[in-house]
Image (cartoon, rainbow, N blue to C red; front, side, top):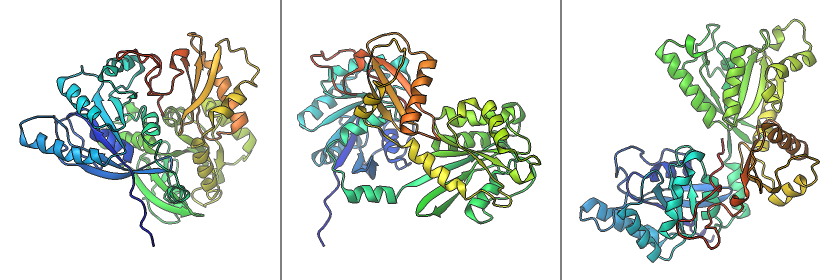
Amino acid sequence: MSESLPLPTIVVVGRPNVGKSTLFNAILGTRRSIVGDEPGITRDRISGIADHRGRRFELIDTGGIIPDDDEMIPAEIFKQARVAFENSSHIIYVIDGRTEITGIDRELARLLHALNKPVALAVNKIDDVKVEGLANEFWSLGFDYLFPISAEHRIGLDDLLDHVTAGVPLSADDEQARVAAQKIRVAIIGRPNVGKSTLLNSLCGAERSIVTPVAGTTRDAVDELVVHEGTEYIFVDTAGIRRKGKTKMMAEKLAVMMARRHIEQADIVLMVIDATEGVVAIDANIAGYAHEDGRAIVIVLNKWDAVEKKDKRAFVQAVRDELRYLEYAPIAFISAKTGAGVSQLFALIKRGYQEASKRISTSDLNKFFHTLETDLDLKVRYLTQTGVRPPTFVLFKDSTKAMHFSHERYVANQLREKFGFSGTPIVIKSKSKNAKRSPGQRPAGAGRKKKLQAGGPVKDN
């Protein structure tokens, strides 16, 4: 049996406290590195295996580097980093976008240029469009590819990783392994006492959660791995979410915080509503959390067995009227207590995840866009997809005129009609013609301090 080829190596480097470990963790999706505010926390090289769209590579987080420093620890860190550099296929140079360029930054840039290795400059802590301009001055460091990012909020990471993994081979085996290892993370959300824990038990076929008629029994989130027809699902039963004014106990406040966190970390959410009571105001607020975070959603009307007048058509209309912004979300009628209708949720979850992960090529998008009969007076050049979960699209246009919400909604609806995207929100953004260059690449003929203009990150909510 022949040995498999070693994975390509991508090295994360930068001076202390610029966010290298946060970026490392964001790429791996783990807490592999220690993250803290004290400069120089990471002393040794830390590595992990990462995967970006089926391309696997080894990611190395170096210690905070201070070139030519006489102190023993920084000198040793730099020595170890040099070994990593020699074996790397690409280097990500992380710099703090909210501070001025320091002498250490320039010296490290000089050393990296001397290595003759591909380097992507990641200007970190650019977490708002209002501060994108802070990244402009870093072109002066002389690198051809610059990416404004926020490692903490995962903004701009897709563009960065698309670039640094462009030369990493994607084999059929890698793709099959990626799909086989895929787990869909599902958060079960809703106000207290709507049957979330009972639903978890029904999905798992076991008494995993404590079930009680007392509202707010679940304080902490519990999770359960379920394999259904070859697909792995991780179900998380979050604490019942209440209005802030009614959340007086510290344990409940923490429960709300944890629930919001699990929504943010989930791939898809089950929004559970008590069918015997219908949609109430707090249901709309809770569902709004998932919608705003860009999560795919399935609306689950629980306790359907206890509803006297079972008119599904009227019930669906009532739900749509109350939750107008969730017109894309499928509705399931179930009884978690008896198990009726619960099995259909697996197919709805899987489809929602697949739809939220769908990518459409730029050529197909523009063929579609040019067939639209629209009064958009924006002189659109082209449409491209920049992210998934949620599907995120950017319209590049000549006009500086802002795109009206009604136009965004129209384009999103047309995208659904043509390509699907059922069960997931769609994000539509627009940028001026100055952003038409490839993300991260220096504009042709630009000087070292050429403005980055409108080519900033598009957030994958």
